[in-house]
Image (tube, rainbow, N blue to C red; front, side):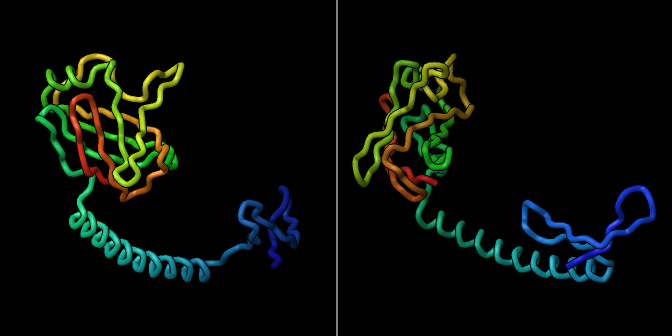
Length: 182
């Protein structure tokens, strides 16, 4: 495909081919009729994807309601509740988010000396919180835990778990069973 492109400051026109290196496609000038056709096809495609997205969202919501998930509020002795358990960092870590309900009990059971564990229900593999030389433990332990705030704990995904796997979390003297990874 060739197109006439203006080159330089004069009125010279040169017939040449231009290639978009990133996509490997030829770049050609588009007239107004072609633009209108492209816009119509994009609108039609967007409406199809919108309908497909709504159906997919409804199916996922129904699946979570039937099977349950870690984002359901699970409270143990009313000191903390688990908000979510998700894969992060391309599946290399598990991100456990919790909310403090009772600050006194939470501070007693979630101090810097406590080593949280995550246990795979299927294989029994124990996953721990990684500790680095510069960052220390990959969880929030500094200061006093305050009520009605969310905190995180990162676990190494040594069992190579995927979404839908069930685990048990042991944090201090608290145990949370049947948590489903989102």
